[in-house]
Image (cartoon, rainbow, N blue to C red; front, side):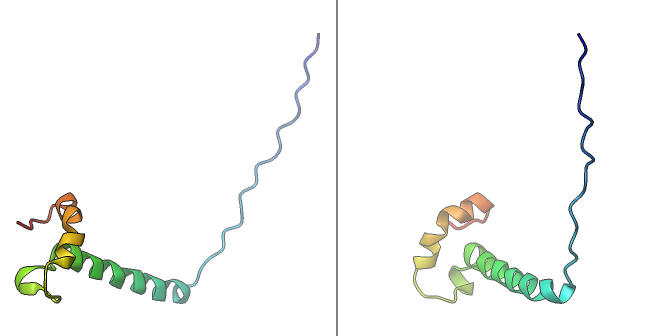
Length: 73
């Protein structure tokens, strides 16, 4: 009894498209600024550095503060 095997198909790699830095830079700057704003609201929006009055922001990000290791009380 003879077993025949098909020849393996040659592997081809997908074409890599290079993105120009001018395309990526505005998005990277936008998301970097967004992350800094979020880090401020989670980490520092309370007490003497508070931009908004009241404890609303503190209550919304309270669990996130503890998860990230920021002291809040």
